[in-house]
Length: 168
Ligand code: SF4
Ligand code: SF4
Image (cartoon, rainbow, N blue to C red; front, side, top):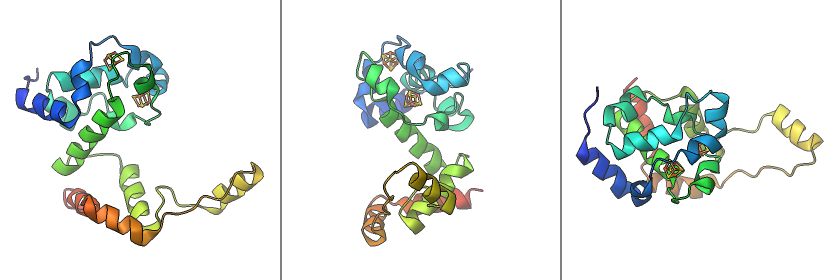
C-alpha cells in the first residue's frame, strides 16, 4: 500500500489549482472514450484521486492507470462540473515522469524527435499526403524550424529528451 505524500499533493495542486475542486463524481471517466475502449482500465477519475492523495509512486513509477493513454480529446474537461483541467494536470504528471527518467511509451519520444527535426509530431508520409488529397483536405504546414527551436530552447525540451535517452 502506498503512503500519502502531502508534499507531492501540494506540488500538484500548485501546478494546477483546479485539482483541488474535484469531488470525485466520476463524470470524467464516464465521458472518456479511452476509458470506454479499455473497459475502464484507463480511468481519469482515478488519476485525479491519486493526485489528490499524493500517491507519487503510483502516478510516476507504476503508472496505473497509465496517464500516457490519455489522447487529450478534452471530453472530460468539457464535462467536468467542477472545471478541473484534467489534461493540464496529466501533462504536468507526464513531465514529471520524463524528468525522473521513468519509462514512457517510445512513440512519444519519436514524436518529440520529429518535432525537433521536422516541426511536426507526425512526419508527412506519401500515404498520408495521398489520403488527405483524396479527402480534399488542405496541405499540412510544418512549423518554422528556427522559430520552433527558440520555443524548444526556452522550455529545455531537448534537455528533457536527453535525460530520457540517458536513463535507458
Ligand atoms: S468530472 Fe471533475 S469533479 Fe468529477 S471526478 Fe472528474 S475531475 Fe473530479
Ligand atoms: S482528455 Fe484524456 S482523460 Fe479526458 S476524456 Fe479525453 S482521453 Fe479521456
